[in-house]
Amino acid sequence: MKKNLLLYGLVFSVLINIFQMVNSSNILKRSEEVSTISKKELKKAKDSIAKLLDNDKFSLDNNEFAQEYYFEHNLKALKTKVKEDLIAFNADKRGNKYVSYDQISDSPFLINDVKILNHRWIIANFSDGKIWGEVLIKYFHNTDKPTDFETVETLIYADTNN
Image (tube, rainbow, N blue to C red):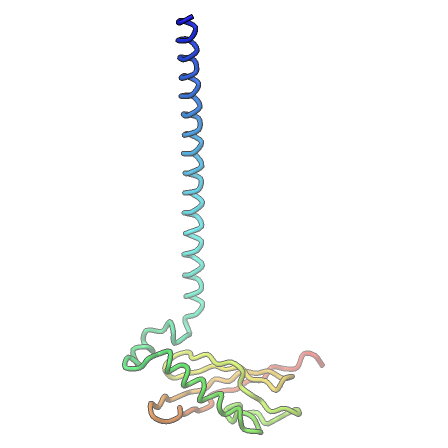
């Protein structure tokens, strides 16, 4: 009887060891798969970020040379001031004066969105609700007074609906 009990104990311990060995090898295998997936995802994420930064080269946020020009200023506050100064001209009933087209329809041309490219240029889009265009504007930041603007070039998109 003692031999049978000893034999059952030995077989049971061998089975437990085999189970643990198989289980730990499965855990190791899954861990390596997760690690490989994580490395691939990390590489994809890095590539995506690099691509985004590369695609946004023309931005004051990513242009170190332009940022050095404003080294004494808070860039966020400066960008906000410049944008607000330009959008303020939308209050004119004839439209924003930096859009070099006269009013075509019932509504005047108003600047909708502004992107500051560097320490000198802005690109903005405008519309009257039906017709759209873009304008390249040269700007000169003034600390204590409104920003000075000068229209460089304006284009209007052909109306493709008619």
